[in-house]
Image (cartoon, rainbow, N blue to C red):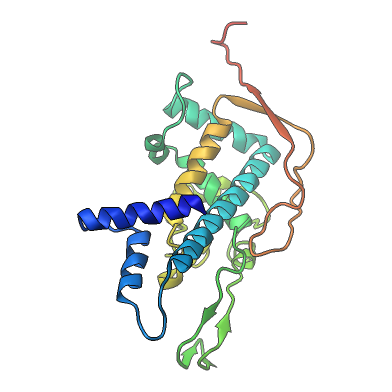
Length: 255
């Protein structure tokens, strides 16, 4: 909590000196606290709670996706080798993968898309509620109807995907399908006004960490490569991975 208090104090002090040209989420909430209303008065406690929720949501979904991505790569050695070869070709072995390298790692991005298709971090997304009555596909939806979108089932629907239970990053090579909410086949982050605001930060984090984990390393596995899930708001593995890295030798490495 001291970290959140310090961050709020820093924002308040900066606002006293000069109005920020690029306000962030804390600035927006401080504006709401200053304006206030009869219905709701935003306090420091509210701001801390919202920031905490955002941090927890971002951390848990990202780490869940990372664990599933590593699980699928370790279960599929051909996919692992192809991803490693791409990184070694585009980055080399004399430095770490940087965020600026990610745009050139096409297969890595396809691999993350395939992971999100099979293992949506939020399988039912956030609950939606209709504000007014409407007709959808010939059905009348009354106001205040709550809707849960089962993106887990969509990602495994054989009417949409060929071999839906197989991990095949190649299916996204040359495909226009993305995870930005424009294609209903892959709604890992939702869409529209209720789409995840942290999509780009989350994707960048997963791309970068997976790339650094597999770059120049060989992984020795000791169980934990099953696909069994445990139920929750997110969908993590029931049993964690047990794997250990070792340096991935090449013909150029000294013996």
